[in-house]
Structure formats: C-alpha cells, structure tokens
Image 1 (cartoon, rainbow, N blue to C red):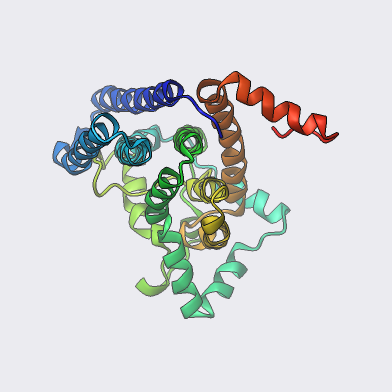
Image 2: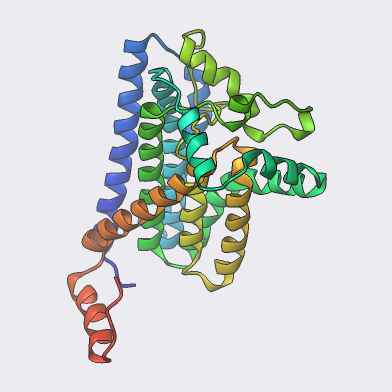
Amino acid sequence: MTWTTAGLRQLDSIIWALVAGVAGLVLIAAGVAGFTVELRSFVPPFGTCLLLMLASRYYRNRRDDPNLASALESSAQVIAFAAVAAPLSYIAASIALPLQDAAFDGVDRALGFDWRGFMVAMQRWPGFFEFMRMTYLSVSVQMTAVVLVLGFSRRLPWLRVYLLAFILAALVTIAASALLPAEGAWLHYGLKGDAAAMPVSHTSWPIFLGLRDGSYRLVMAVGAEGIITFPSLHAALAVILIAAFWPVPAARWLGASINSLMLVATPINGSHYFIDVLAGIAIAVLCLAAARTLVTRLAVPPAAVARRQLAPAAAGVAAPP
C-alpha cells in the first residue's frame, strides 16, 4: 500500500492524543471518585515508553529507518494506552450500576448455549484446559509480536489500523461495561473449584466486587486486573489480531489459528457469557472498519485510492472496500 509519511505522523499524533485524553480522564475521575493513584506502578510502563520513543526518534531522524522507528513508537503506544486504560476500567466499574448477569444468562439460554456444560466439557481434559489457559494468556505476547511483524514487513498503514482498532475497541468495551456491568458466569452460577480448575479471571473478582461496594479505591498500571465482563475485550482482541496478522503470509494462518482458539478459551478463562464473546466480535469488526477508514483518509494518497478502485472496475469486478 502506498502511504504518505505526513499521514502516518498525523495518525501517530491522534493515537497519542487518545492516550493523553484517557490519562487526563483517569486523573480527573480518580480525584472525583476518591481513588488513590499508585504512581509507582506507572513508572515502569512510562519509563519503557520513554526509552522506546528515544530509540524511535533516533531511527527516524539519524538512521532513516521508518520501519524500525514505527515498530518502536507503536510498541510505546500499546504500552502507554494499556497503562491508562486499565485504571479507566476500574473507575467505570465503580459506577456500580445494577448487574445484568440474569439478562446475559437469559440470552445465552435463548441462543442454546449451555455454559455449565461447556465448562464441564473443558475440565474433563485437564491438559486441554491448561492449553486453553495458555492460549488465553497469549494475548499480551501477540499484541507486541504483531507490532514487530507489521513494522518489519513495511505494512505501516496497517500497523496504525491495528493500533486504532485496539484503542477504539478498549474504549467501547470499557464504556459498555460501565453501563451494563456483570460479575461473570462463574460468580453468577456460584461455581467453585480448586486452583487448577479456576478461570484466569478469578483473581479479579475481589477487586470488581470491591470497586462496586466502595471498599477498593486504588488505580494502578502494573498489576491491574482485567475486570470487564460484557463485552469481552479478549474476544475483540482475538478478531483484531487475526485481521492484523492477515496481510503477512508467513504469520496469517498461525495468527488465525491461535486467536480462533483464544475465542474458544474466552468463556471459561474469562468467566464470560457467550453473548459477551459475540458482542466483542461485533465491536472488533466495527472498530476495524472505523480504523481502516481513518487510516485510508489520512495516510493513503488520493491517487493511490483511486487506482485501487479503478483497477478492479476496469476488470469488471467490484472494487474492494
């Protein structure tokens, strides 16, 4: 894809503005709601971001390596946004609107999804259950890997599509979780199990409940738990990662396979309802479309867009979106 450097820099400015906006919102909301901000927990991520940005500036201005420079800056953007988005989700949960678990469970039943049966089936094979756990936890590694893959394969506009889709999906899921909070299928059903059979998300339950009853009022970057039930951000990220890896032939099917398995693992390890996963998938599709539209308008020259539209038309086929 043809792109303009000025357009890519404008997109980077938009991404940093979103990070700064979320950080400002967290500080204001934390003060209003009586949260304590654990400043030390923000030092490692933002220190890492500073080093990455200095390296990016060096490879952009001194070594003229836009691929490495983009990969370094995009890594900083992922880390910085994750550091401020997690506290935002805590503040959203503290609004403590009525829980919607009964409604979500009702939708699952109407769709024919048996959450208990799914859980029992998964736990019959401990080895497979553990494999699903590892797949579920792979999201952090994948989010870093896709930045490097897209950066070094010169797919710089698509790298920005990935970043913007991730940020938009996270913001939408946080907002939805504030309006439609849920404690998750495991707590809703009152299920119990030993440590080996507990979902990955079980460590977040006391924090979620404490945020709702006011007994927990601490926000942090390092050590923050994922507390969103509806919609599933894990499901949204699985779809976004599939799309992000897809343009790279060497990574396409590996990314699709891992993230398809992550979708299967999400209901158990995230204690999600099936409708949470469906909603996450829908949000990912919409955010990818919005991100691609923005990147095309800002980073791809109009002449290049016109050529892509006219070539298929001349061949008698529909133009790609």
